[in-house]
Amino acid sequence: MADISDKNENRDYVPFSILNESEIPSVLQNSREDPRGELSEAVKRGLVHDVREVLERLKVLEKLELNIDESDENGKTVLMEAAMRDNITILYLLIYYGADPNKVDKDGKTALMYAAINDIDYMILLLVKNGADFHKVDKDGKTALIYAVINDCEESLDQLLINCEVELNEDFDKLLTLAKENDDETIYSMLCNKKRQLEINRYYNNK
Image (tube, rainbow, N blue to C red; front, side):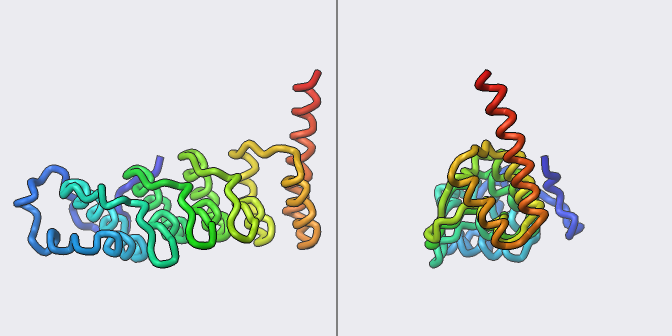
């Protein structure tokens, strides 16, 4: 699993969970007025220490009732913001603290879809292993698999095909059609190989 040490900073880390509230600096207590915004900014900055510090502080101050899945004006959660950025450790921390990978924004997109769009394969693996639903469809009728295909995201597609229980159905045929329309030989070949594998599995399961 991911190493949650902060490679970007040399500061010593003292978990807030071992402190009493009276021992936490007043400046930190006063920042509770907008905990979601503070956590969002820490995620966007991409510093593991800052994200972990905010999560620990919110926990000891009983503010993780704050709802880690609270969304911004566009419906995005901090997990979605993390999935759009190349920092697996922050994504791991948010999931560890209970972030829901199946929340959707105003466009119906999930964290898994954003990871697929940005072709971050190891984020896809972490999300899927922690319950992300690859069947989710956004308002445009697209799934994480479709986004991986139409954006020529080979690594994302590979992780989705390996780790999701893909079936031979109309949805899979749609993926093949999209890949062919995009004239992407690699993506099309990956899907054809998966189709052959599924056909073989079906044959032996029906014997």
